Length: 361
Length: 270
Image (cartoon, one colour):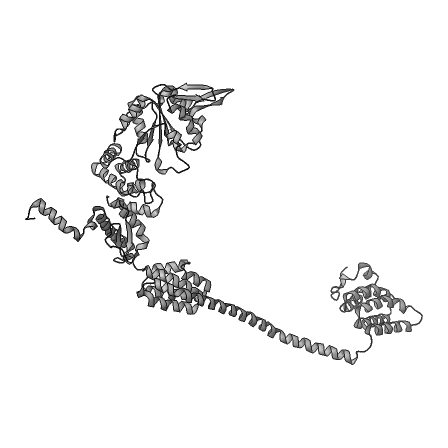
């Protein structure tokens, strides 16, 4: 059995036996009626589908129309009452008094609908509508207010942190300046000021690192400026990464430093040179940079003095050879005692020579 | 080849090993041998201790049983043990027992590496009793007058945990070895590796310089053995710097800066 185009979803609530109870000529109409009533509520469709075959069997079109109208009337005010009415009405139609069904429907309609709406209820509903509308309009503003509150709290925390690091910077800068060689103080302060303006926490890292870089002559003044400028660009993109840069904790910071490095730093090869000199001379030789000689005898017998960096050549390998030659020279002097020469000993030496070779010596 | 299947005569050297005496060590050893005294050889790695024992065993016409001591070496490994063979249990002499029975020289190389309870086994052999108790067999072996016990160790790299007990040390005549003087070391290189005078002199010069680093990060200096290796590689056509790097530089240190300084020392000669 197939249903016509009007059937729609009616098959969900019309059982096979229900359809079979409907005369062939009326089946299409039956299905359409069920579909239309089920559009009000699915449960109505189910009950009407169940009752209609009984009415259709009586071949009374008016009765069917009246049934559907009354069911619709009750369903209009309450679908659950409509379902119950749809179920009871066919029995009431069979009562001897035709007015019985009419009265039943009216009673159920009134009972379902209740008394007419009073003025106070309407006012309350209206007020509620207005408030709800106002609340809906306030929602974006409340959301924005919360956002602003969170933003301001974060800024407050940041400012507090900034002030704390500024205090720390105020405390650490003087001792760093005292350790910094005077000729680098100006460039150091300029660079630290730039970093501090951007991020006081990063400036603490930068101050420490610049102290080492400048005192160790790992970069020139220009190199220090360039290194800081590149770090500020990193800091601008990401504070944490920027701070890592200024503490030389990032690969990029080291790469930039390497790029800016001029010549070969003594500290990078000092141990190799020390071992080289020690092996050559058989003495425990120390390698010292010229900047480490304060209070020490430059010609002391236990150390070779070399420049803190070697920049004669573009290639580090050649600069290392230059260091090596200077080290071998120093090691030779240590091994053979040349540094032991003293002007004080000259008169004794002359006397000894004179005694050995006569007054002509 | 298992020790048990070897004949004692397999331990006899048939060709005189090359050894250049550096002092009175040959006379001292011979004297100790004839007096039945055990000998202890002390010295850095590769300075010729083992070669000296080989030379002396040839010179004295004794078999030489060498044991490379290690921390898992047990007293049974030295003396002997019962082993299963088919359906029966048979006794198998250890290398020390073989040496004692054959009246040869037992050489315990790097004795300090062996467990302390193992080293105590040799005590009865090292005093006037000259006996070797085989506890598991219930026998006592009396060492013949030809038997000689020799041990070696390198005091340079022994730790507190690995040192000879005093009760062991004080049972031996000690012969101390060190790297040979330059002229002798050159002669050894010429003989052992076949390099010419100039190359031998350069190798010895490098060794002398590198040995200056012994208290500066190198545990030991370059051994004469490594110099011989360098000479052998060079004699086989390897370029001198490469030969020296492979034998003098890289084996003695993993410290890259130390390696670089040694390469620079090599570069002063080649």
